[in-house]
Length: 347
Image (tube, rainbow, N blue to C red; front, side):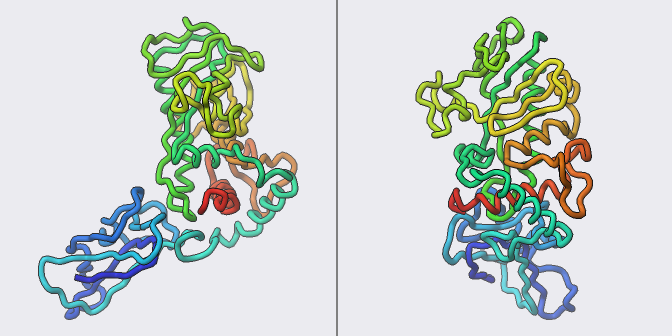
C-alpha cells in the first residue's frame, strides 16, 4: 500500500516502477485499486492509476483526481493484493493557474494581446466589476446550470421535433464555451446543462405540440416581439429571486434565445442572444453555429473588435467575420474573465 499525503490539489497520474526492473518498466500503479480521502464530483479517483501520461500541465482532455472545494490535507492511496517492492514513484500534478499548482499560464504568444484586451475592457466599461448579470453570475447562481426561454419572433410554425432540435443545438453551442472552462483555474463545473423552460409566441397555434414540457407565453409583446414572462426572467429580477413567476423559481429563465425572421447578423448580452430564425433552423445540425457562438461570448462579457486588433492576432471568433469557431485566443479571453471575476464567487 502506498499513501500520498497531499494538499487539496489535482493529481493527474501516478507511476510506480518495480525495484528489479529498468526505469522504463511496466507501471505497477495500473494494477492497484485507487482510493482517496475525497474526490470532487466532476473528477475521478480512477485517474490516479489509469496509466494516461498527460501531454501538458494544464491538460483538460483527460480525467483527473482532485478534491476541490474540500481543503486541508488530503490523501490518495493505491492498494495491491499482495506486497510490492518499488524502485521509484512519480506523480503528475495539474496546474490550472488558480487553486492548484502553477500560475496564470496562457501561451507566451498570447500574454501581450490578452493584457491589451483586459486593459481595454477595464477602460471601456467603468461598471465592469459592479455589474452582476454576466453569464458567469447566472451559472453560479444556478449552481452549474442555465435556463433559457425561446422568443419565437416569426410567423412560421414549430413542430415538437424542431423544438427539441432547437434545444439540442442551443445546448451544444453553449457547451463549446463551457468546455473551454472545464478543469481550468478553479472553475467548479465539468458540465453546465442547458434547459429550455419556455417559449414565447404570438399565436399558440404556431407551436404544434400539446405536451407541457415547456411553459408557453402567448402574445406578450415587448420590443415588437413575443416576450417570455418578465417575472420569470433574470434580466428583470437580478436579485435571483422570482416571487411572481408562475410555477416558481424553477421556471425562471436566465437568458432568451430570440429567433427573428429575416434578421441578419446577431446581438448578444446579459439578456441572451438574438439571431435570424431561418439561419438557426438551417444550421440545427451544424457543428459550429458561429453567429450564436459569437453572441454567447458577449453574454459572458467578451467584447467586439470592430476598430482594433490585439497584437499578433488576426482571426478569432469575437472579431466578427474572421473565424467560425472558438479559437485558442477566444478561449483564453474567456478564461481571463473568470480569472478577474472568480473572487466574487469565493474562488
